[in-house]
Amino acid sequence: MIFMGKVSTRKRGKTWQYYFQLASVNETRKWKTGSGYRTKAEAQAAGTKALAEYNSTGIAFKVSEQSVADYFDYWMEHYVEQELAETTVNTYKKRIRLYIKPYIGSYKLKNVQGETLRNFLAKLHRTGMSRNTLTCIKGMLTSAFGYATVQAKFISVDPSYKLTLPNKRKDSEVGTRKENHIFVEEDMWNAIIERFPEGHPSHLALMLGYYCGLRLGEVYGLTWDCVDFENKTITINKQMQEPSGCGK
Image (tube, one colour):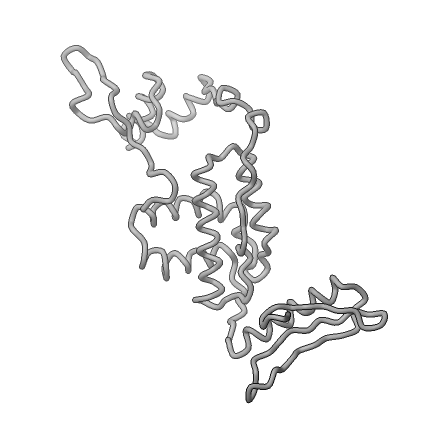
């Protein structure tokens, strides 16, 4: 049985042919065919392309020369900032700045393929990125490229279609937390303090982190009730955390 919207192939003599059903006219079935292909795979590929062109007839795609970096700015302005919560907007901005623009921002939007995005996620995966963050970025790619295809019509094929996350890594692939620590030598510390001298907004946070051994979240989680000026002590009982995943 042949279904409308499905490409089929058959051998005709020494070559292959593709065919698929078109919309009926006056209740009469119509077919699109293409012949002369050396292999079944060639016929299938040509038929798939022909079906996509047929299905998009009447849709005016605006072939975009813009970069991925510029497109993500467009997507943020026209969709994310209009539709999503502020926490999600801020998280997306950070992910775009730290990961998407540095890795794939220079690509032309129209040239991005599924393989481009799979390689991008694989690179992030190999850095030891958390599963939550990787899932967030994958969701952003799916949403952004889907918007470019359906709403903005900058591209005709969505490269994020059926995009999946890399398999979970084994501990041996990325090393342990201890191996990934960066130890600040005295010369490096002096250079940091020279860059952020007393009076700079980040100076006190750096001093607390360095001399008290605090994590970043613990530093910014400090409140005045944690400070005992009389006994000259600081109580660490809370920390600031970034929302997991992509926010709400």
